[in-house]
Image (cartoon, rainbow, N blue to C red; front, top):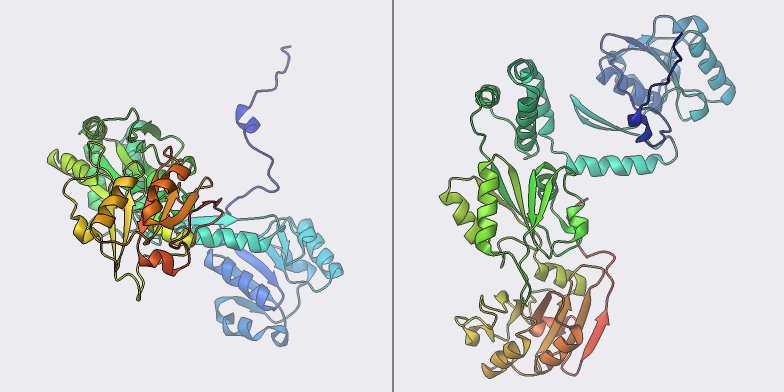
Length: 492
């Protein structure tokens, strides 16, 4: 007789212990028992009816809450208390019991009848629990804290509600309609290709139109005929560094990407939000360091998109502000590659929030200007109208101006801006390593020496800088300001 060998199950070894098993119970056409007449029992009855169950309510009429009575026509009402014989033929039993003795009795009778039981707000007498629910039916998400922290479960639900577009409901219904065709028509690899593209559209946040089903079936047929699938490039703004400053659209794009081409300044915590299976490629460009050529980045994006990949070009800050997005968009469009842009919070906005410094101010700055601090050759751009930039009623923010700070100060003063004009330099905006210097325009070069040249900096100049108390003519202060939270958050 052969010895019995216990089969190895590597999958179980990779699953952390669970306090309970999340399952989804199909209640369509089944009868469930509700005992009690409180508002809590009414909510459970409504929830069970929404899942397709026939809900039998056992409670005398005069014991029903006013809210329960208003919706009683949705249920089968028994004008009596529950009895031991009531449990026959029910799929689930939910009790609203005032005492532990009653709860124990209700629980024991349900168990004896083989009916899964829940006693509201009495975990010791529950075989199953109701979690917080995100309803995009047929997509349903259940959240449980095993009764330890219901408020935490509700908070998690609110965050998922924010991240999950309402349109997911319609797309899930479409998936039901076309699933059989896709399964029959495509191989397993082709099906994955189809459903990944389907998910991209579902998470774009737009409702499907009337022609969605024929269009999706046509997509499946194209994949079956080995037609080369069209790739797509999305330029995504990663913000200044703090992952909580990403937009919801940016997170969704990262979760859907096949390949992510990211800049050197993109923070690790932002990259952590990307899909685990996505290939990540560093294509950073930094002044004074070995960098990727823009031509190589363009060629890489094009090759990946032509291979049918969903490409995210992840840029620090906002792609459309000193991000060379125009060159990349033009290159892709010339090759008929679809491209779209998801904006990000630009570093100047994050700096203003960190400092509590409005970029515009009724009394001091009626406009704001963003100026590049260096040209492609490393010095100051030759075509900047410095007489216009040296406007005392404008807040001017210089990007990438660390090494040209002395020249910037000289040009502004030469063109009429007072040497005492307030200035601030900030490095690593919104990150834990954030540093800032406050002083005047005449001391800008000294400020850069204190900040250092290793990390990216912003320089802000103007009356609005001093108006909020961040700098003065006599100030020359370096501050270490570890960041815990920026003043506005893009992800709930």
